[in-house]
Amino acid sequence: MAANGYDIVPCVVRQKRDKWLKFNHFKATIKQALEKLNELVDESDPDTDLPNIVHAFQTAERIREDHPDEDWFQLTGLIHDLGKVMAFYNEPQWCVVGDTFVVGCKWADSIVYGPESFKDNPDTYNPKYNTKYGMYSPHCGLEKLLISWSHDEYLYQFLKHNNAKIPEKGLLMIRYHSFYPWHAGGDYRHLTNEKDEETLKWVLEFNKYDLYTKSEHVPDIKALWPYYENLIEKYIPCGICEF
Image (cartoon, rainbow, N blue to C red; front, side, top):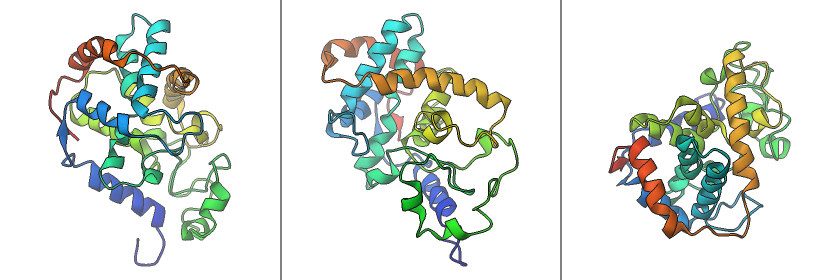
């Protein structure tokens, strides 16, 4: 927190980035990290009480059905929630899962529980942050925005750090898939730019599979592993990766 009592939310986001983007918390293969998700049920997701690894394979397999020639897209579906491993390392789920939103400007109307969640937050009343543009300039672009910390940004940065070969559009799907106030709520268009409109198309395409593949049907994960291990080796060849 800044000395004047303000800058609370931007400061927290920067602290989380500083903590996690050193990538010094643990080392594991992608498969080992994914298997940890077998122990995690996302408390923010009302659509399923299955472990996250099941959702990962459900998403990947539906993408594989519709996009059989885009193996990078299939792998993106498999790993898109991998950043949730932060929950096993002293991070509460409230700052790991759930929808993301821009900090440092007026809270968007479409943020879930927004008014109730922010009424006691000093940033709500700080003229530096409570205006339409806040600390940003018009159409500065997604890249310039400070977004609430989550598994999305962590995994995006992890993949960049470990030299993943997934195309940039796949990385952006991961980075913004929980940014619902933007891609579903229609907010922040005054901050995004023309390049972001192309990103939006890919994020919406991805979210068809993220949202609508949740069911009680559990894929045969053991049988599917060899196929996806080959994709991991092809696109994330770090072996033992730094998380």
